[in-house]
Amino acid sequence: MAKLFGFSIEETQKKSASIISPVPKNNEDGVDNFISSGFYGQYVDIEGAYRSEYDLIKRYREMALHPEVDGAIEDVVNEAIVSDLYDSPVEVELSNLNATESIKKKIREEFRYIKELMDFDKKSHEIFRNWYVDGRVFYLKVIDVKAPQEGLQDLRYIDPLKMKYIRQEKKKPGDNPTVRLRNNEDAVPNPEFDEYYLYTPKIQHPTSMIGQMGGKKAIKIAKDSVCYCTSGLVDRNKNRVLSYLHKAIKGLNQLRMIEDSLVIYRLSRAPERRIFYIDVGNLPKVKAEQYLKEVMSRYRNKLVYDANTGEVRDDRKFMSMMEDFWLPRREGGRGTEITTLPGGQNLGELSDIEYFQKKLYRALGVPESRIASDGGFNLGRSSEILRDELKFAKFVGRLRKRFANMFNDMLRTQLILKNIVTPEDWEKMEDHIQYDFIYDNQFAELKETELMEGRLNQLAVIEPYIGKYYSTEYVRKRVLRQTDMEIEEIDTQIEDEIQKGIIPDPSTLDPITGEPLPMEDPMAMGEQQVDPDLEAEAQKVDAQYQKDTKTAEL
Image (cartoon, rainbow, N blue to C red; front, side, top):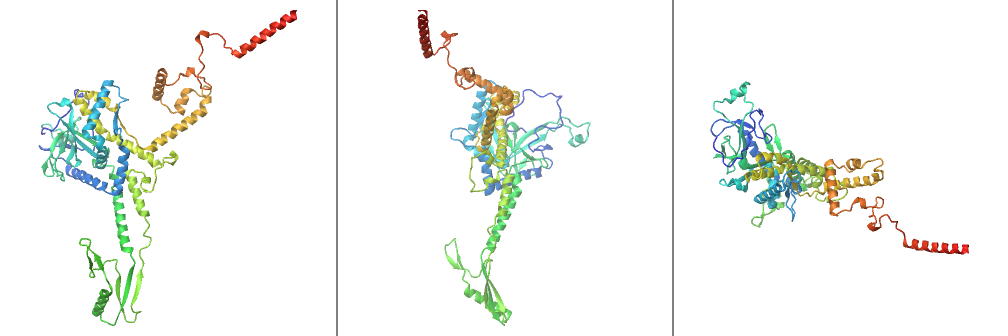
């Protein structure tokens, strides 16, 4: 195979030769495993796959231009990417990462650098929309080949129509793939594959030659040089990456047809038309037709406005379907007569249009309540919130997680090139690196608020029985629904805040009233505190007692 353009990140530790499997890795992106023949590599049934993918992306982009589909796409993108005046739409979250603070600081700095290369803060809406519509996104990672340790120098967007991901089985000298695959004894248990991308600068319909796309020779680019993020939807029957718009193709076509038929029906049936019955007597057929035309031209005045020239001209020679009807009538009839044909009835019914609109929105995953233009935004109780809104919030969350794979790939390349982490370290750290998007869906927040309010009300009812019928641990786990990790984290935070003086020490509070206990004088410990008024009264009583005693003695 010819030398690839770009760079590759080699693993420092090769996998053991004893780890074998006939199933190749990373087969979740709709890429077939092809066996090559020839220098450029012509593949089995590649023409159909290529054309299908090319046509699909074209279809998705045409769908996005339809007003209803565009509105649904904007609802999804606006929920997923929230623009804020002060904060970035997405930040890296490293609270679950077991690493030193210096490593975390470098990861945050590199992530901000990647966002600057993409200009993500300004173009986040456009980038996410392109990924959502096309079902995939490509970015070329540009580095300085003389100084790769400096990391990424640029990230350039590539039109998906110009790129194709290829997985090709490595051909060894003397191998006969057909014979080898049919012979179980000679079958290779651990096949090796070359993975790369094909890029063509000019968008043309692809040909059957995999080394040529649209009559132009394609450029092979190394796998690590391209960031490739898909929607996660794959047609397993045809091994094709799909967009989230794919399931709405039929619904959109049905809506278009029903709208076009409605327009035609209303144009043809809306106006009232007249029928002129002209008495032609006993005239022959030819003369009767001539007489009818003379009457038509005499009474019909058709003025046409020409929008191009601004002129008003007489256009009597044309007859449209919305004009009147002229019919001859023989002698013996009722003579000349004019009748009126009523216009179409029930022209204001739109129930069929609304049905197909709702069907289209369901296919796009957007709540039907968002179709109504007169519908307001109510931030009331969660009981007033439709279940569709909560489902929509979860759907947007899944989209964010899938879209974040693009950041993961770019961050991996940047950290490894700059020797911040090794490929082995990245495999351990990858699952603990999360991405925090700005959240703007108040429906889920309202639901969480009401759940918390209900738990606290339940706690207030059960609190007198804590220590008698219920333990504190039971209440925290079953009533407040706190996990073991949350309990440990909350206890640590409480102790820290008590030491800092943010909250008072529970030992200094009255358990009944909750008020702080009176401070005792350390010098008077052990002495009983006496009210001054009571002490004075006792002294008076004592003096009177002594006086009475002396009097009694005398």
